[in-house]
Length: 249
Image: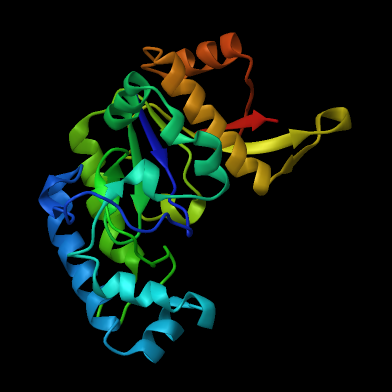
């Protein structure tokens, strides 16, 4: 089983790990794309006004430009600890037991904009870059990442992929065709079975779901396995559009 997670715009500063080693991250075949995006991100930081405009950074967040210029040399944290926000607060990776963190390290990728998908335990620095940003001198991130990420995911030959990414990040690397997978949408169910998409609770539910998966460490190898595990663990799933499941909260 492979779990794909979105990143978060908010990140924990600092870290105690060595600077990022791009060829040591998950899916090392993505090294050329990682090098190109980081080079453009660092170069953009040389013009603070341009960087603030391109990255849509408010005056109060201009320190994030410095994070980008130092992205190759600044200290790192495991990706699951670097990100904050609703999903990652619900995951609460810092409180997980060693075996649970190890499971996430083996089964979860967090899809970042500058590094592509990275392992949950891969060390990454603080940065500021979103999926929809176009960096000067480069094509749109979707053109850089999508085909390369899909091919890289295919080469790992996962038996089942649980895709919890937002649509913006899923577009940066669609799950390869032919792989058993499910894209999860979190919804609420009202009278008559009507469903409504959620935002805040969408992220919270995804974080809680991943925490439960890590705690259970169930041998999930197919969508049917995932459905059976979810039912046994008290999660409510419904059929969605082709390739999708609805998680009812």
